[in-house]
Image (cartoon, rainbow, N blue to C red; front, side):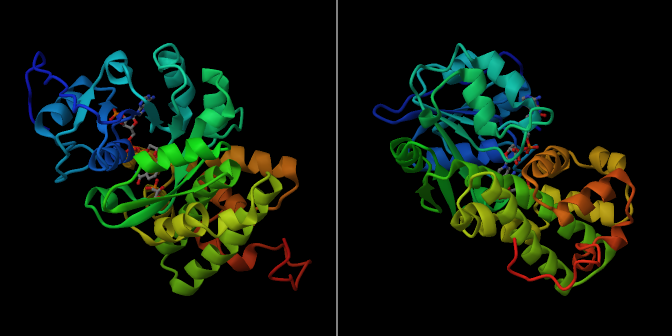
Length: 354
Ligand SMILES: NC(=O)C1=CN([C@@H]2O[C@H](COP(=O)(O)OP(=O)(O)OC[C@H]3O[C@@H](n4cnc5c(N)ncnc54)[C@H](OP(=O)(O)O)[C@@H]3O)[C@@H](O)[C@H]2O)C=CC1
Ligand SMILES: O=C(CO)COP(=O)(O)O
């Protein structure tokens, strides 16, 4: 990263008439999403928790830690001061690691302008409470669910930062909020759809991470395409059972936030969850994997709360259970495979039975 003197923070230049939006979290996704919003015409302020990263973004229009080689647009400004970033924003997007959301919301609670939509870009479940991110937001900000939206889909950050075309779905219980956010969250290379299935949209993003870890594991072991395709297909069945039992609509799971994201994440070495799985499959321990990953792999934190929720719902999640066992070191990565997803005494199993 360029060494910029600490006292030079470029001033924010406001474009008259442009929508003012704030993004909290300047990792790969927060920065990429800020670029999408700016390329869609908004005036964007981005919060980076490290002052030197905020300065690099604001001054050099680069985030070399997370998006090397990507030029950021001039209408994207960054600061490490939350109040400056949130001041007069008309929409707030959240993109910090899921396990840190609650503490971050507590810090900004009083700074978020009244009545503005708050949008989760995150794909995790809080450990302990087992809450989805929109539930944590509703609780900590004490706002009505209709003001909250979630955005999810096949959205590998670096591909979007390179302006490779993709789609995303914005979900809110209030269709007006979903449309308002979808209108802001567009760019020549990103099309936003809407739905009102917040549970399905959020769980799609959470659960595909776990299946991506499983696919990474078998990839690391050296198994081929049949094994991966079987895990992806049975994984979708497992995801759908869990989400529907939680109140989601089944069609959401075959949409962008379900199948769409599952395909992208399971198929790409850009995926951190897939990469974490591959390292496990190559024989690294959980602790080694965490040490080697310098970016967020949400799936590793979501396994336990998802299995706890599944227990409560009475839903069997054999693939996620196997991932948990590999993480715990109680199952060899070589043994994670779809043929082990029944205990043998309930064979044959109807493929369509949920
Ligand atoms: N990357 C992607 O392709 C996509 C990611 N997502 C989701 O977006 C969310 C954010 O992930 P992503 O941007 O990829 O993660 P990264 O690992 O790329 O970046 C994490 C960001 O969060 C900051 N951070 C870390 N710990 C804290 C904390 N305790 N409080 C506040 N900020 C913190 C980091 O700051 P610092 O640099 O100072 O450590 C960094 O800015 C995740 O839920 C992920 O699932 C969704 C779609 C696509
Ligand atoms: O959510 C993502 C793509 O849609 C990114 O996946 P990873 O977090 O595994 O990199």
